[in-house]
Amino acid sequence: MRNVFVDMKAYLEPIILIAAIIIGSLSALVYSLPASIIDYSIIAMLCCLFFNVSIDHLLRGAKNKKYLSIAWAVNFLLLPTIAFMILSTFVDQSSMLFVGLIFYLVAPCTDWFLGFTKLANGDVDLNCALLPINLLSQILLLPLYLFLFTSRNTHIEVDTFFNLLLHWVLYPFLFGQCIRYICAKISSALLGKCTVIAERGMVLALAVLVFSIFNNNIQSLIGNLSILPITLLVVLCFFLSVYFLGEFISKKAVLARSEKASLIITSSARNTPLMLAISVGLFPNETVIQLVLILGMLIEFPHLILLSFLLRK
Image 1: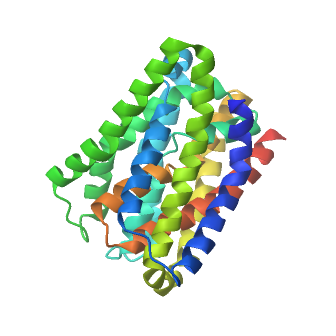
Image 2: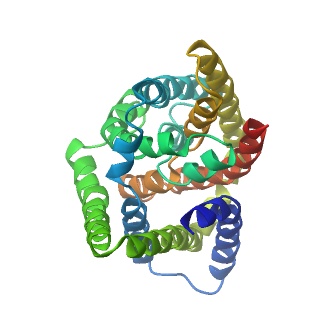
């Protein structure tokens, strides 16, 4: 049941998000939601996201240390470097657009990329093992990326950042994992049902978050739509680099076909929900960053669908 929903989510989520953008923008003409809705939807989204992070998956695929090592090096060493090089070529480093694209490009997905891994005939167990690794690595490395790549135009207090991680990442993670542990202790059937509910809950919470952002900030977002062409250019250059890099590394490392598909998918999918939550906490008044993340997500979904069928051939 969960696999069916994950597969469908790959197609339905962009439609739901586009609807949330349109309805949120139009509803702003009539009524503005309380800004606190954004915070509540972020917390709900993260609790659902972290509920579906299974530590067991790490042990299941951890035997393939070769793949996990390559995937980690690609996601957290090569791709951030490539992202910075592309951005430095096309985007003013002193702009909030640069910061928003750094948020989008440096964090690999920890959720829906499994659905695309399956669509691409990749090794789902291997990428399941990457879930906790990707999550922990991006949380620990994000301050370093922000310092190295955006220190020219942003000043983030270390205390502020880790206080944000404590309240908006660690607490939702502990809550989600506690509920998961209780469900697993009761029965595996209950855990399976709750997993589906959490998947749907995350989509719903993300839709409410996008709806609220556009409802509260539509004038500012409309004023910044000029960033759409450069965002599209940077994201497409990044995705093309990811594909050819994945092909090259897979050939040199003699990866199996399923491993190559898994590597390219995990390298292409970005963790927009978590980065959206962190960026709102760090830069609540910089709507450009949130707009970039949402635009990146909308570009990413059709790309991943096409990529999955290309890898499947």
